[in-house]
Amino acid sequence: MSLSLYDLSVPVFTRGLGQLTHLFDKSLAHAKANGIDTATLVDARLAPDMLTLVGQIQRASDAAKLGTARIAGITAPSFPDEEKTWDDLVARIAKTQDFLATVDRALIDGQEERPVTIKTREGEAAFTAQRYLLQFALPNFFFHVTTAYDVLRHSGMPIGKLDYLGKF
Image: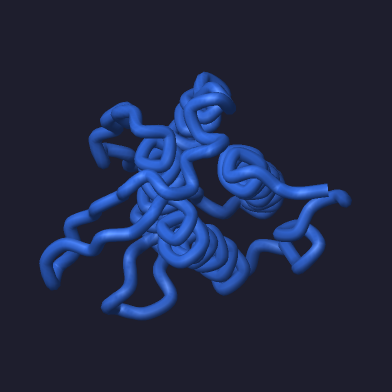
C-alpha cells in the first residue's frame, strides 16, 4: 500500500492537533482539581528565549494550516495571534482542525512536485510540495506540538508519553 501526499499531511496534522486537545483537557482537569490558575500555564515557557505555551500553540496551528494550504495550492485562513487565555488556545486548535477538514484530498494528491516557496529569516527557500512537507512542515509542526507538551509537563501537569502519542 502506498501513502499519498494527503495521507502524510492532513490526517497527521489533524491527529497531532487532537492530541494537543487531549493534553489540554487533561491539564485543565488537573489545574481545576488543584487550584492552579491556567493563566500561569498559558504564559509558561521552558527557557527565557523560548516562546510561551501561547506561542507554541500558535506556531503549531500555523504549521498545520500553512503546510496544508501550501501543498494544496490554496490560501490558508489568517488567524491573528491574539490568544491570551486557555479557552483562546483551545479555540485556536479547533479552528485549525475545522480548516483542515475542509481541504479536499484532490487538491493535494498528485501534487508532490508542486513548487512551494517560503520566506525565512535568511531569504526564500524553495521546495517541491513533498520535500516541503517532509523536511519542513511536519518537523516544524511536531517541534511546536512537542514543545507545548514539554511546557505543560514542566509546569507539573500529569501528562505522559502515552498522552502525547494517543490511542493506536
